[in-house]
Amino acid sequence: MPNHVHALVTPRVFATQWLGPLKGFTAHEANRFMGQGGKPFWQEESYDHLVRSEIEFDRIRNYIEQNPVKAGLVVASEEFRWSSAYGRSRLKGGCGQDWPPHFSV
Image 1 (cartoon, rainbow, N blue to C red):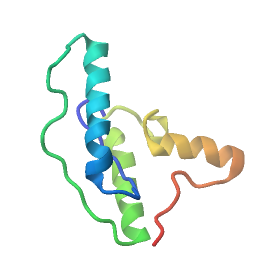
Image 2 (cartoon, one colour; image 1 turned 135 degrees about the vertical axis):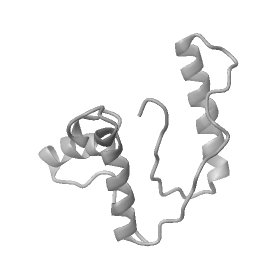
Image 3 (cartoon, rainbow, N blue to C red; image 1 turned 90 degrees about the horizontal axis):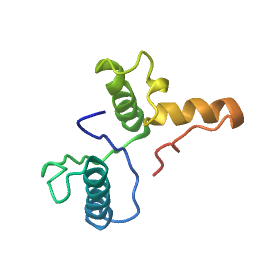
Image 4 (tube, rainbow, N blue to C red; image 1 turned 180 degrees about the horizontal axis):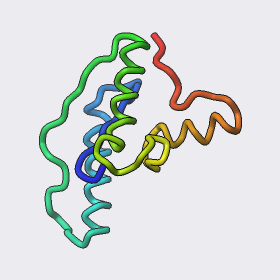
């Protein structure tokens, strides 16, 4: 998406240990790419939600993958290069694996 990011992750550590560094690195690289050194890149807000089942995981993944379609960026979710749908469409053809790995308890 050109103006926001969705991420569905299953971290083994608290979000504060990886989200801040990830946002810092990506902000630095994006600002460098756009020639806007030192400007704020990410909004302060973020929304996190604990996924409690595989059904909920699949529902959220489907929402995220359909977001570029709803925004009119692509016709099919598999066409959006930065989507898990894109990655899964390539892996399923070659090795039959689901990607990213499913939710597990």
